[in-house]
Structure formats: C-alpha cells, structure tokens
Length: 143
Image 1 (cartoon, helix red, strand yellow):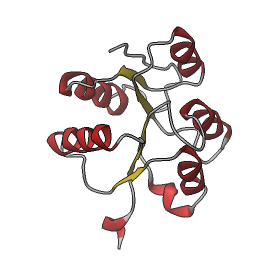
Image 2 (cartoon, one colour):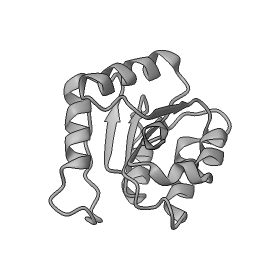
Image 3 (cartoon, one colour):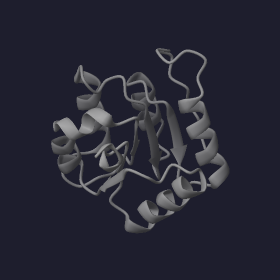
Image 4 (cartoon, helix red, strand yellow):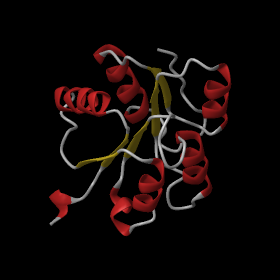
C-alpha cells in the first residue's frame, strides 16, 4: 500500500532532537510516512534499498555514530538515484568548515540547533517551494 512508503528520512541520533523534529513535522502536516534512523551507517544501508526511492527529503544531523553526517551526505551526492534529494542539515555544529562542506555538497538548508519552529518552517518552505525544482544553487540558512 502506497501510504506505508517512507517519504521523509530523519537521520538523528539524539532522541530528544528526533522527537522535537517529529513535533515540528506534525505542526507542518508532514509527519506521515517518516522514518527515523539514529546511525549514519544504518541510514546509508536504508538509502540503498528500493524503499528509499519514494523519499522526498532527508533531515540530517552531522554528528552521528557509525558514519558521520558529512560522509553520508557525500555518499548521497555520489549516488545517481539519491543525489537530487533535498537535504536539510540540522546540527549543533557552528564550525565554518561544516557549513562550507555542506554548501559545497549542495544542501538545501543548514539550520543550527536548537531548531525553532520558525527556522524549521523556513527551511521546509525554502526546500519545497523553489521556483524551479531542478535548481542546483543551494539555498543556505544559517539559523
């Protein structure tokens, strides 16, 4: 049944941040068909499955066990089937290197934690309401 297909992937190892993101997705009416994975390697394994073909977006933390968020992002961008997916990075990192690496890898938005509903809403709007769906210029948001 199509309603059971995962449409949004959250890769977040902090259960409190994952719950907060789910509440924000519920407020934005985007909480159906969400999968939460708390490990970068497990997220990569999921992305290799056919079930991941139905994804419309990935919310990604950078600091993950198993495989870092940046390494996972590099693998997503190297995969012809997944490189088009919008990736919204939500991280506690304030490192300029992380921001620059994410920008180079074409993330849709970069939001620093703690994520407010306003910042989350803007990231979602910027990601899903672009004038041209194939736009390759990343839209960056610094908290």
